[in-house]
Structures are given as C-alpha cells and as structure tokens.
Image 1: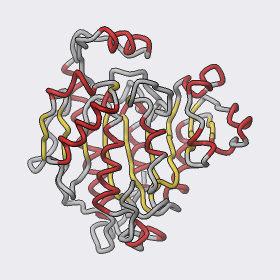
Image 2: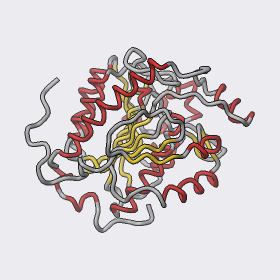
Image 3: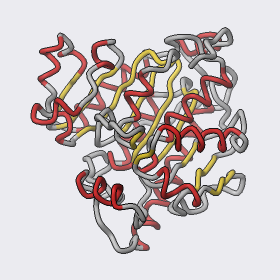
Image 4: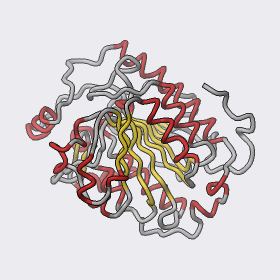
Length: 331
C-alpha cells in the first residue's frame, strides 16, 4: 500500500478532520472511539427502528435527532448494520446544513448487499439506497463490494428499478452478475469482477474523478476473517477499504460507518419473522472477541477517514461551491 499524501491537512478542506466523531448509540455495539466523541443514547428507539420501520416512526426519530445532531460533525458510527437506513437521515442532514446544489453529490456505499431491495412497509436497512437516489442533491450512487445473491436474475424483481431508469445507481460486484439490467438498457450500471482487487483497480479512478463524495461503509463488505458481523459477508480486506478511502481524498463531505455486531431479541413477531426470512445471523450473544476486533477496525477506519477529511481537494471538489452554497433545500 502506498504512503498517504504528504500534503494532507493543508487548506482546501471539504470536511474538517478535527470534527467530533458521533456515535448513534442504539445497541451499545460501538465501543469507545475517541476522547472527543459525541455519543447520542438511542436505546429506547431500538425496537421501532432496528432492521426496518414505518415512515412515521422514522420521521419521529429524525425529528428527535434534529435536536441532538450538531450541524458540523465527523464520521458517524451507527452500530449494527441493522441501522444502515440511518444513512438516509445523515444525507438529508448534510444536504440541509451544507445547502447542497442539485446533482452535486456522489455516494459511495461499501456493502455486501445492494441495499436497494423492495420493502413495502416503510424503510429498511436494505432499502435505503432507493430513497437516497430520490434526493435532489444526489447525482450517482455506487454500491461496491457486493457478493450477495440479491442482484442475480432470480432476485431481479426484488430490486428497485427506478434508480437505474433514472441513471443514478451503479452496482460493483465480485462473482455476481446483474446481467438483467441490460433488459432495461442499463447494462453499464453493473460491473462484475473476478476479485476484490480487480474491482478496486477499476473503481478508485472513478472516485478520484468525482466531485463531492459521501462515503457509507457497512463492514459486512469485509471478509469474516477480518471482522465478524451479524449478516452474511463479503470478501474485502481492510486494505481494500483503505484504498477506497484514499480514493476519496479531499472530496469527502460526510461519512458513516455501520456493521458492528450486536444481538437483539425483537418483541414483535413481525420483525422476528422478517429477520429470519432475510437470512440474518442468529446469535444468543455477541462474542467478546468479535467486539474487540470491531473496535480495532473502527479505530483504523477513523484514523484513515480523518486523514482523508484533512486532505486538500483536487479537481472538481476543489471548488467549494461545487458542493453547494446555492443549494436546493428541498433535499
């Protein structure tokens, strides 16, 4: 792995590396990160929000968070991947406080799943990408590292099609193909690779050529040999996430990290059923070794992300206005 650029920390910031990291603490899975972290207790919301929720419950949570989230903050850790749909709130928070212009933001999602799956009951940790694609400020969304069968032909009908029709969404997968997108005339919106290294070699130049970026990392993209989660996992190593972060140097407007391991027993039968149907890993307790490894991974990610946030912007991202001071507040 190459050294980090020597000019990190100079002027031209998209995001401040000194901004406090935030923990949205639903499940106590994120162990202490930093002396300056802001930890927002949300355990009372776990039953309603975890895995999936109604739009009404989500609106109530976001209203609650609006009174707690600072306008400027660092990387946000949300705990279990069951809370990945909180990325939608964080994107809206960013768009509102940065007044992002229409089509000024690209989203990079590192995830073993497309998170673009149909969910008719509201919002789900596996459906939020479709909602993010509807935001006016979003130009493109790249979901990278997919090894899940969610994108193969047998599951094509479960994927939302509108983000592809509108030319916003791109799947980057390892060992899986979404060839059915050719039927929509969107064959170029899915790229399959034989290895994680080949995928990164193709994707990093795309990130470097982009303007303003939002990065969302679900650690289920990692191989189980690196860190364990309570979902089926991909094949990335930590070095692959580092390469993605390096590709975002000087361009990051915001970041969130999810995919810590935690266990929760739903009180309601409906969520217990949906969780089983979705193939979620069943555990009686989270092994201490998993949590220790996750803490180490989080520390590495936070270090790299702070360096990336401190890096000077180059190319389109060097123009702060590109991320919008004349933004569309409807996002």
